[in-house]
Every structure is written in structure tokens, then in C-alpha cells.
Length: 332
Ligand code: SAM
Ligand code: SF4
Image (cartoon, rainbow, N blue to C red; front, side):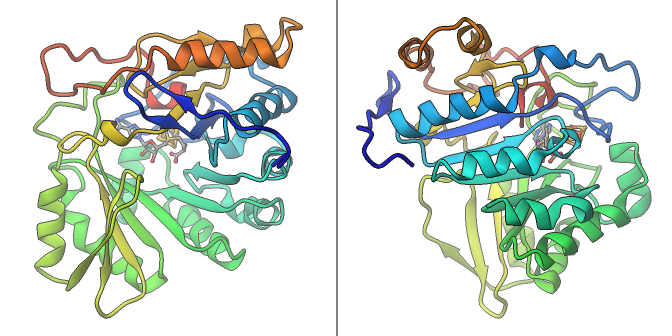
């Protein structure tokens, strides 16, 4: 971070200070998860439309140096399909900010060490089933073994704590809650169960498919002795085991939205800025970045966008509108 730079809190209309940036580095992916992408026919963005590493770094630098952001997470699509990703991690971590990554883990064995060497501070690996056939059905790829090996590679590279994101869906994988807990305890990885959210891909979502966080915790408590961990501003509610060093958490985006403490904004792979995962409006930061405008213009555009951040997503209410983009196009 540039310690000399004066910081200006980026405050939204509801008084929340924005400090966390999620950057999608690509819309492409080597998986085709049922809830995220169709099996065939995805149309990818042309290369020229993606932000370059220089553009991403400039945007991030303004967020960190001017607005005092303290966290950046890289995501996608599958971020590891973007060539030379460790180079971007190195550029961003040299800004003095925590850099995290969300990945499906399939090619992590190849990249874990160079990501760690580049300064990656946190990693989340998505894994919705520990059963080979089910994993294949959910992701349309027979890659469970490679993902498990990717988790080992992340641990070997010292990227602890490794977190596992498991989206729970009723009648699809909710019989694996205890298996995931046992897996986390054995490998000392932190499992995060995520409530399934309504984003436009396929026809999978309806409120009956959501497995509420409270039900997940009850299932866990029937087998394990859990102690709650005092919650900060993070979306996960977390517990530790009384007899094991791993921890476990739930992200109750649907049944207990954490919008009131949301400090997050997003940049899509083609440079569209979004103030909420479910936002309808986008702000074209690529036009500003490519418009030969100075950083003041970028700062003003970010402030203008954050001035429109709404109170919350209103999932489950009559006024809720599903965004047209899926998670992979927004950057989950
Ligand atoms: N490809 C990477 C991966 O799968 O980790 C990064 C992008 S992916 C869109 C990010 C996360 O969003 C994954 O953990 C995925 O399970 C989650 N996700 C996608 N669609 C979702 C939905 N409708 N509800 C909840 N989580 C979702
Ligand atoms: Fe790819 Fe991640 Fe979407 Fe699965 S959830 S299709 S791995 S972007």
C-alpha cells in the first residue's frame, strides 16, 4: 500500500463502508456446473473485451490507495484458466492488500505453489459432492480426483486455511453434510456450506431446493460438539469443534441475508462494476480505463456507482428480480 496516500472511506447511501473488491478475471470455465452454465453453447467474451492485467491493477490500486480497500478476491468463470494468473496475484499483493482466490480446483496442482509464491493469502475451493458419480452429474466433468488432489496441493503449498465452498441443494447433495464435515476434520480444511441462490442458469432454483443454514447446523450438531466463533463482518457464521482444529461455517445468503453489513463490490471480466451480486445496473469502468482519463475520473465513477448501492437483494420477496447474468458471468 502507498502509506503516504490519504484514504477516503467509500460510503454507500446506507452508511456501509465499501472495502472489498471481487474481480472476475474470465468468463470461461473448464466445468459446466448445472446451476451455473449450460452443457453446451456458451459464448465467451472475445479477448479484447477482457480487462488486461494492467487495467485490473490500475483499478485495484485506486480502490486500495484512495479508498483503503483491504481485500481483493479473484474469481470467474474459472480464474485458473486465465493465463499467467500468478502474475496478476503478484501485482495485486504488492499493493499491500490481502488477495484471495475462488477456484474449482481442477488445475490447482499445477498452480498452487506459484500462487503461494506470488503472495496469495487465501483460497476457497468449490466442491459440491464427495461422490464421483454425483460430482460428474453436477459439474458435467469427471474431475473429482483432480479437485481432491488440488486441495492437497494447496495445503502442501502452505495456503492454509484452505476453505471448501459447498452449495447445498435439497435432494441433490444435502445427504452429504456430515461427510463434508468428516472430510474437513480429516484434512484440516474449513468447509463452508452455502445456501443456493437464485441466479439465472438452468431451471434448478426454487425455494424448496434451498437447504436453510439452521438445518445444516442442526444436522452437524447432532454428531459434533460445536462452539460458535464470534462473527466479524464476514458473511459466514462459523463454529469450531471442541475436539478438532478445523472449523466449519454456513453462508446463509437466502434465509439470513447479511446485506446490512455488506462491504463488497464487483468488477466483471469485461470491466462492468456492480454494487451487488443481484444488481440490475452496471457501470462501465472499462470505458473509463480505456478512455485516457485520469484516476480522478475513475474515483468519481466509482463514487457515483457506490452512490446507487441498494439496501439489500430482497430474495424471496415479491419485488425480487433475478439478474440476467449467472454467477460465472458476474464473478461469484
Ligand atoms: N469457478 C470458480 C469456482 O467454481 O469456485 C469460481 C467462480 S464460481 C461462479 C464461484 C462460486 O459460486 C462457486 O463456489 C459456486 O459454487 C458458487 N455458485 C455459483 N452459482 C451459485 C448459486 N446459484 N448459488 C450459490 N452459489 C453459487
Ligand atoms: Fe465453472 Fe465455477 Fe460456474 Fe462451476 S461454478 S461452471 S466451476 S464458474
